[in-house]
Length: 170
Image 1: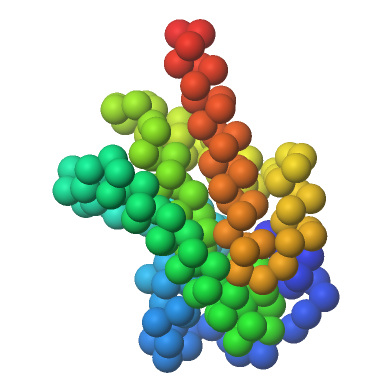
Image 2 (image 1 turned 135 degrees about the vertical axis):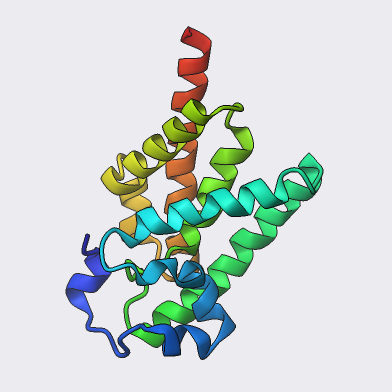
């Protein structure tokens, strides 16, 4: 999927492993390499959230996990902003740390069970891709690292709202 930034700017640098390893911000922004996927990098980035969550959740208290998410968000503002500037495309599709952090938030509130985990993934990806209001507004009007990170938090909110409604109804 080509973002509005990609339509109007050309890449200064073709991202590859050499680029990712040239700066910690690039490696983080590209989700440890998952953003290099040739097809659907956002989907691959979202999937990276699962092993991170499975590793951290049993080791951190709820408060520490939420603190981790806040730190991951603000680190992402820096890493995604820095990487986007180096690429010449602020919201390049391969920048997936925003999907990872947002999906970690969704997983934190997702009930136990494989079906809930699959539903969480599908709902988050649906809202991240379709960008219903106000997500599209923020995606188009907020720029830099904060803009990259923020619209995915809104998609996470939509996914969580839907899961809460489904859980209430069933």
